[in-house]
Image 1 (cartoon, each protein chain N blue to C red):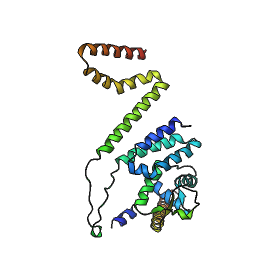
Image 2: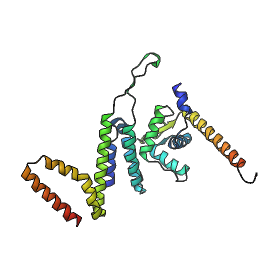
Image 3: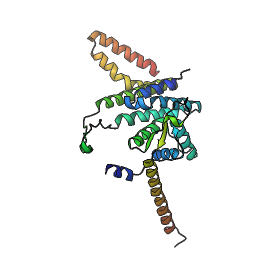
Image 4: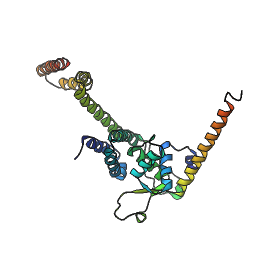
Length: 117
Length: 150
């Protein structure tokens, strides 16, 4: 019950971008920041405080986990993060929700456009 | 070489809750170093300050004891006094830094700020002195204030 109510809540912009960045591949913290800046065309840049606050929440909800060390080079001590299947499902739900909002907004704008009157 | 901004960021990291700092502190400092090379250190510093407030004011759930089927959940309603103290210290630290910075940039503007911040402390310390000493201290304080106001 608790999980259902949490998953139905919209994700914050930072959490959405983090999940989106991790959907491609496992990444370390600085990689996520750079990927978010690239995805948003440098319009949205998060700092490490915002990043780890959101990562902590996502890890508590089991949407993101630590990537196992075996999946990367031995000399790389950095901590990598991986999106879980629950995280992918949440991201997919969020994208569907945003898509329906966009569709609804387009419909309303078309209805309210002066060319119709 | 350790820059003043890096020292300030380390101090900001120290103000985070112990658990959060232990888990992410090193990575945050590493990202600060990387961002400093790109000239984004101020942005990261401000983000760190915001993070101190967020992490200290957010209620953290107490560790849950293992119960059958996880039916019972223990709630902690006590005030996080330690966190409030940390936030007050942070605010005082930031005010002090701002005052010092302003005194370097605009000396004429720094005096009213100093008066607001340190006059109550001066008055309080004078109250604790013997009468004759208090008069002398009060005179020297007024003299200092006048000199800087000029």
